[in-house]
Image (cartoon, rainbow, N blue to C red):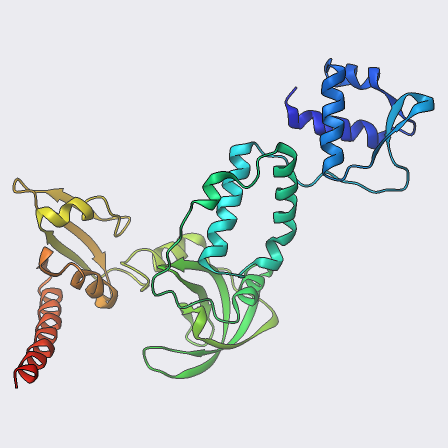
Amino acid sequence: MDRFHRYYRLHHILSSRRFPVPRAVLERELDGCSRATIKRIIEELRNIGAPIEYVRERNGYRYTPGVAFELPGIWFSPSELEALFVAEHFLERAEPGLLADTLAPLKHKLQSIFALEHLGRGELVRRVRILRMAGRGTGKFFNMAADALTRRRRLLIEYRSRGRNETTERAISPQRLVHYRDNWYLDAWCHLRKGLRSFALERIRSARLLERSARDIPERTLDAHFTATYGIFAGAPRHVAVLRFTAERARWVAEEQWHPNQEGKFFPDGSYELKVPYGDSRELLGDLLRHGAGIEVIAPASLRAEVIAKLSAALAVYGAAQLHAAH
């Protein structure tokens, strides 16, 4: 019998019997455990708060009458427990305090099981680093958005768009929370615009849970709208970017996933061609420019022209600064 199953079995035996259970009975019902094993399991359960007492006159064990006790959560293998702690560790490092109150009871139970197994928190948790770059935080309404998602309710929000710098009030039906490039977004049906939209959580200025049920959008429709094109911008892809990377840059880019439907191939000189569907070029432009001279946009002509314009504008800035410094 697996060790964890013995804990459950012993808990079930003691909680279902009215009278103390002799050690010999425990040994038999726990698949022939030895006396030493029974004593060790009892002691380990006591270490996590199990009120097990020995009744000498009946030569047996029982739970102390009137004292409630439940095992501390679901049992996992040591590797599964470590994975759970690492996941919690990731979330805490990525967004400090985001779900602290929600996860606290589970965290306490996991710690109890770790203590029972003498595992500590493990080396992996202490040696994991998470580096956030340019994350804007969750804003004030992450928990409300999550609540609306799970309860399938509408939200009334005031949203300050970053592009137009305008504030609008709108009712939305939340569909998904998305963590993308260290930032949180809420995919939702916008009842004002009559369509699917993505809202940056930190741009929500106020939010109120409405009594009306949220409109449910099929998963296939959400995927087609939000994941068909490049990056965070939604909608159907209208273009395919054909990008040629130098042999040096190819050593990195060839192993990256820019889009689920991308196509890539190497050339004899070691250069790498990547084809990526996109609709809105704004995010794609930023990713292309960071590769500098390591990339050339082959097609479409409109995207190539945009890159040339951006590089020319940057060169003009640096040229003007250099000229000013010379004088």
